[in-house]
Amino acid sequence: MESTPRRSGGGVFEGIYKLIMRRNSIYVTFVIAGAFAGERAVDYGVRKLWEYNNVGKRYEDIPVLGQRPTEE
Image 1: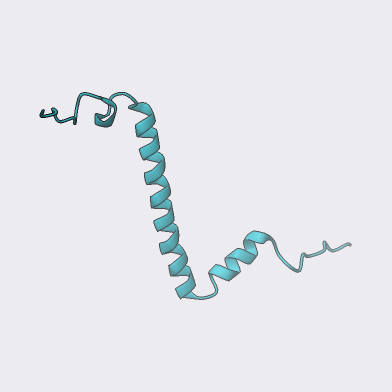
Image 2: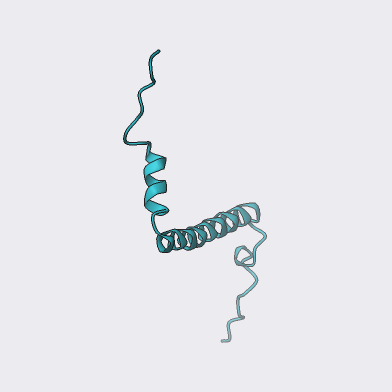
């Protein structure tokens, strides 16, 4: 009966898991930083999608609006 060889080093994900989960302070920092980065990414993506879908309909796109009459 042959035994299957074990990997001694583990995978990349296992190494990251061990690095992050080693101490509670590192884990909490990772979660907070991940939440902040994720929020920024979602905000940027939704804003770009909204601008793409509303080209020509926004206040900035209408040339007449926002201009003051010139006083001579």
